[in-house]
Image 1 (tube, rainbow, N blue to C red):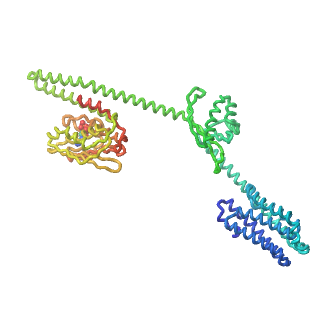
Image 2 (cartoon, protein in one colour):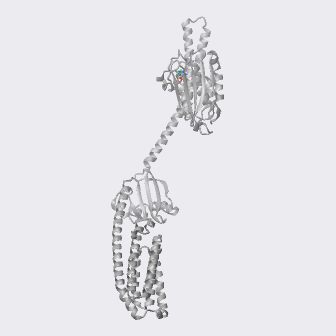
Length: 579
Ligand code: ADP
């Protein structure tokens, strides 16, 4: 219980043990002094008893320091107190042997109270102890007149001798006990450290990266087997520099200087550095490595070692290069395809126009001469050419729907829709239809994209509709992340099993005699919407109408420039005009 007093101030196990040792030492000193006091009183030596009381009071004060947590001050104070007590005893008793006995004690006490590595504290304690002895030799001739009579001195000597002897034995035992315990602990710690070192080394061996450590002089202190596979060489390299290694291997010494450069730089800057290095190996193959150096410091910011690593990134680089090549190739092929589609659609336009013109001419010039079948066949041929024209135009539009050459701009979807309705005016009138809409948002998009998207949906809503009064309604909802536009109609509807298929290119649910079309419109819409981070879906039931939805991601359409989508509207317009 006593030995643990003040323990609350100890942070580590070591501090705890130091406190226990200090408490033990103080308790023993206290016991000895109490014994001395008793014998002085029994022998009627009141002056000596008074000094012993003063000493006991001093010890009590030191206990108080320990209790308050001032452990180091208590350690220094205990040595100093013992010395001052010794000097005063010697002065008043006038005997020099007494001083020598206690000098022995003070020499042993630092050993007991302090760890040897706590040099600053030992120095303070001993330095303070020297003062009273220096003063003693200087003052003793003047103070000897106050000395105790010889008879009394003899009695004091007789009583204190066994006490001093006892004190020495106990102290020696404590020092022996403490040292042997520390030795054992040091041994255990060393074993622990060796075990840990082995574990870390094994871990480092498992990593397929060249890892080495250097000391302050940039000499190798550890090399893993990924860095140097030959164990003999690895052993040889410990303590050697890069220069030594390059010389030994007969390599160009400039390589060593180059390697040291990054290490020096990391040391100078005190931070981790990383760089890529490319070189030709023995077979002339281009290799790439990622090299790095990182200084490791202890808590006092003293350099412990420098870790160097090197990772072979040749395969990664090659894969990266290959990927870039694939991307370039893909881009080239895309360009080719684009040009092909453009050229085909462009070049086919005029022969198709000619075919139509010649067919019409044929029909006009031979009006009345041709039988009914021939007239009907010419009509079919003209329609087929018209369909082909439409198909070419649609395919072209599909191919450029995800190309964005024009910057997006703040577009009022209401205006775009009004234009779409205006363009579909004829159909609306003929079909006795109505197209209504609520307020649509303003978004950063390419207006031509939105025009094509809404045109396709509105035209489909009117086309696939047998109602005497086709009704189309366009609305917009918004949530935290997107705008959702819906185009609802009261048309023929779609069976649920086709809900996904209709967005695929060339997927049609009806033949041309039922409803004209190419099966490309919704695929174009889907592609456009994808450009703005959105998607398309449909809710429908046969004969109950359909609601087509498309979403636009706010992060793509809410701020100018976010939607990095442009389109080739110029070519687009040209195609539209031509058809
Ligand atoms: P197209 O209209 O040229 O055939 P789309 O890609 O626009 O091509 O449409 C694909 C198919 O989806 C159409 O053939 C049609 O069967 C169906 N569809 C599209 N819109 C509607 C609609 N509003 N109501 C019913 N069916 C529709």
